[in-house]
Length: 379
Image 1 (cartoon, rainbow, N blue to C red):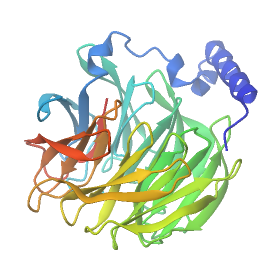
Image 2: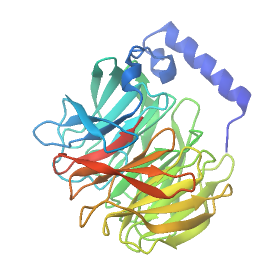
Image 3: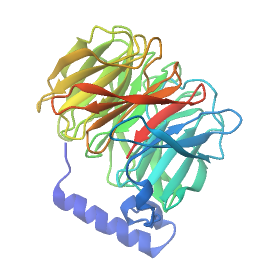
């Protein structure tokens, strides 16, 4: 599936030249060529970011992670957009760029996406742009290319280039889903190498995927039946294994992609975790472990992921968020040593240490998030 190395290098050179030539061409520069606030290193490590999704004015809450206890609230920043005030039923409402300089947040009620630079003294709002559709609920980024999932209306994805904090639409970056209505999409996400874009559809039990061209536009659409009903959250490992949750039976499946194809190939079919409503998925940076947040049982399950994508259950209830506290959005620290879970009914972020064997040890919890908060990212 990976692009030829020389093709990638040539593409990056062309994009960099285009960015330096004119503002219009600058829309095709990778985000690592953009000049975010390089003095913001203090905010680029050890933090958690969650959206309040508030209808009176969406905000990003920033927390300091701890190696020996729960996270602590540091500050809050307005997105200049509005949320729905209720859970979004999605994964990826808050996303960090791969280089750690940018934070993207959906504003589901105002149909916009906010882009922040991670500055020395906090988040710096750079732009608020139209999401290209209705009710944006998920956003993903790869080397400056940003795709937004719009769950409202007919649903679909819209592509942008991050140009120094402003999202500029990509020509050919609009993608439709498996049906014109009623798909209830849950997440959009890039494969690790950025060659494939995937959308999970809850109502149709389909995975819709696209090949991503070098210019950021989308090639042909592939629609694949999910191994289990109601595919929800997913994550890619560094070996491009796709790990997908299936909510009703609380199962998890894995897929691989053939080279130059957007069609997922099933590896592990609907492995049950013995819990309730596996919906959100997170993987460790080394790709060895995956976790499902089980909304119905307020628990987290742990899995091992083999190099070929084969999935094995380590523990169904590897971590608990509290009695009826819920378990939704998750984030793994870049070191792979911590897992953070938003307990939506308990309105708290519950933190765990990830042991070298993939088991979880509790670190504690911090509360105070408003009802309806959504998305979680860690650096």
